[in-house]
Each structure stands twice: as structure tokens, then as C-alpha cells.
Image (cartoon, rainbow, N blue to C red; front, side):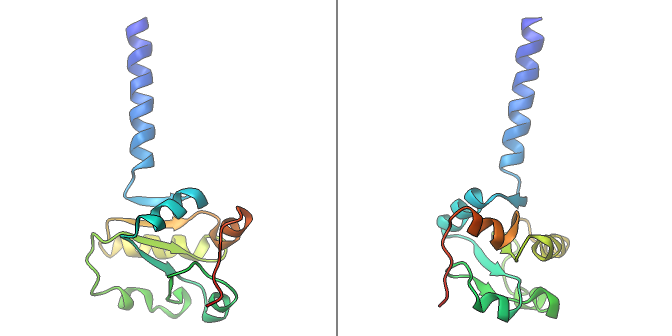
Length: 128
């Protein structure tokens, strides 16, 4: 019985680690901030220019998902480059994440809850 429980615990732990290290998916604000801090990803705000102007993450490129510019904007980016996406609440960035994954990008994440969740967690935004 002890061996069974140990094996089950090991499988659950391994599954949890695999999810935490998934190449594509949602990141909560703290995990997203850590991914940004690594400095090896392209940070992309998929909101409109007007939304971007009201505050964005420092260093984010603004590529409006609604204008279908995203795939064209990243056409020359290596498919293995980590891409970090966010929008207002998570809907557009999730759509963009799926489109980029379908286009062959292997490390795409979106900010769960968008910039609203980011701000709710007291994280900084830039107006520059």
C-alpha cells in the first residue's frame, strides 16, 4: 500500500511540474512577471493603441489583435522564441496565443486575467 501511495504521489508531483513548465498556456500575474524578468521573451500587448496608451507593461510591443497584424508582425521571429501576450482581461491574448501556437510557435503564454489582474496584484504599469 505504501508503494502505491508513493507512486501515486510521484505521478501527481510529476504531472504538476509538467504543467508548471508547459511551453504554452496561461500564467498568473506573478509567473508572468517572472517570465518577463528572465529577459528572453518578446512581450506583446494585443490591445488597441488607445488601451495601450492608458497603461501597459514596460517594454511591451503593441500589436492590436483586432487588426490581424500579429502574425505578420512576428513572421520573422524564430518559432522557439518565448512570446508573452496580454490584453485587458485575457480573452484576446488567449485567442492570439492559440493562433501563434497554430502558426508553429512553441513557447507562447498569456497573462491570465490580463492587465486587470496585473494591476489588481499591485504590479507596475508604464505610461511612456
